[in-house]
Length: 255
Ligand SMILES: [Zn+2]
Image (tube, rainbow, N blue to C red; front, top):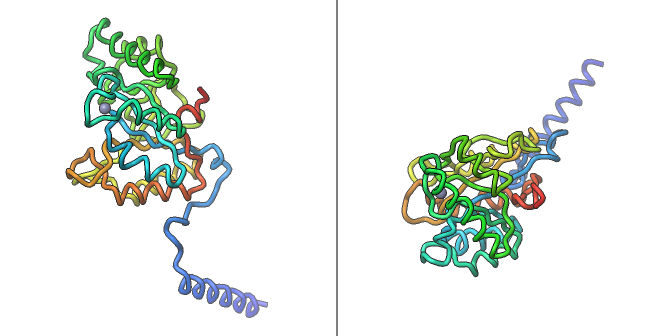
């Protein structure tokens, strides 16, 4: 009896060895096993500030694999500064299922503003986006800097606020006024695609919501705010092939 068990075990091990030797697993296809929580797991890709390369570089890569994104717009820059998106760019993104949310009017540190300046930053950016026909209920604080006064004022014009938490959110989110984002850096402190894949797998296994934050996408200059194209493509293709739900704020939060 003991001998038979041993024989079967050996055969199984031989088969495992044979298979692992014959075909190397495609790294894009390797995902952590589904758990009971995996169905509520979510992944959101967000770009802060509204730079032109989000449209010229990131959008084609993401559209190609059917992954929509979110852009947090500094509204005074849109259509006014050549380094930023135009209204037409934004419209095309919106029509492709992307979200356009507020990153204030002029990108001030909100926690330093008086009530009047704070109102201007939050109200005018919200109204500008809504007047374009892009429904938004999300505010993203510049520099992740906010305080209770900022949140109180934000509650007059928004239903959600995204901070810079560098951690995962639960689903549904525990705090509508502190939605998370995990920054993906370029330059010398680069966040590697391998790290990001681990985050995605962790979120998937644990039923969490991961929001990946980028700024610029492009190879030049070498800066923490520019994420190189090849690595960006690697992350997006991994996400596209991954069973985790890819969501925007409007598709996840339902507005
Ligand atoms: Zn910003």
